[in-house]
Image (tube, rainbow, N blue to C red):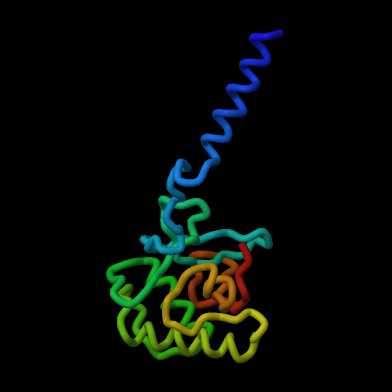
Length: 157
């Protein structure tokens, strides 16, 4: 009985040390600061396909960021594709996030902020899922091999 009491007290002390300020392990970096490094066709629950920016090392993979200066990247291609198809932006779909892509994204964000003010979409020209991805329309396809047949919808995880 005494050894059991000692074990319980030791566990409580150890637990308190783990929770004490300054002794806890550092929290992981915000995944929304991680760059999207790829684009991926994702099949939705209603059997449609959507091409989204992802980071292949994250879970969920869509928890990533794209901004001006991110170049040669299929995640940027997915973003540019959305801006052209769903928001009518006249930009190149080239995988390079430059000033034209930044301005096109700001216009799409401003549109969503105006139309759906309750969402409070940031209009900063930076893409990440929490601030932009879930609040803009994405082109949905019946088949991933038919990129010209699509319907723009809001994406939910």
